Length: 110
Length: 115
Image 1 (tube, rainbow over the protein chains, first blue to last red):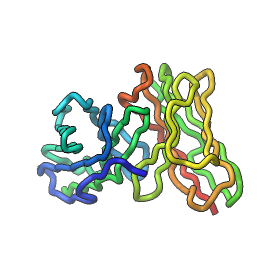
Image 2: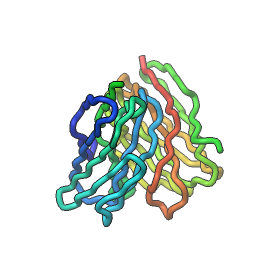
Image 3: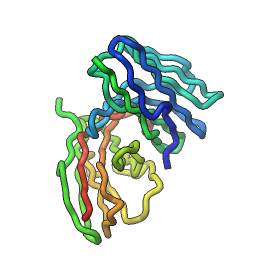
Image 4: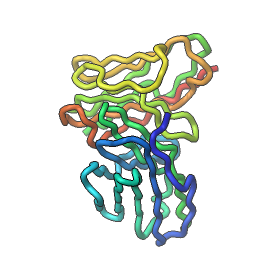
């Protein structure tokens, strides 16, 4: 069973706009990670945020974590066509169990 | 540096058969995890191995088994294949961190089709 749930399931925006994806989870976690996947290929790690952190930045990416609400968000600023992909959140629980959500399919139109 | 490699890239089997999938982690990585990704869904955690010991197991039947070798490569075995086992099987390795995940580096996956 999957722990995280991404919202929305699909998102379509124009190049240059910002994209925000949300992730909710159910149990206490050690850390939360965001990954990108292009067309059913291997996943690429984007960013990791630990349970005692509230916000992290990496280039055009900004991730927030609210452990009280058991939710996280991924913001991609100034989106590009190359950002078109599926984005997954993954939560690591304390028993070395990694759970991925079903993903958000992002389409960035040129 | 070579990334995580998996073999084979594609595989077609029939129901009831057995399959072995292989994974070589990035050099220096001691943790290997296996995931099953059915089309349209996120990856589902199957196993994690660290220093050749099983550290985590997902909700998969006993038909699924794995092992890690002294060189940290890993095999995933699936017995008595079912149609529902058709999926992309992903392997990921992580740098040494005492067992917790940190960043995972994924291989390209093995596409298994069960007919």
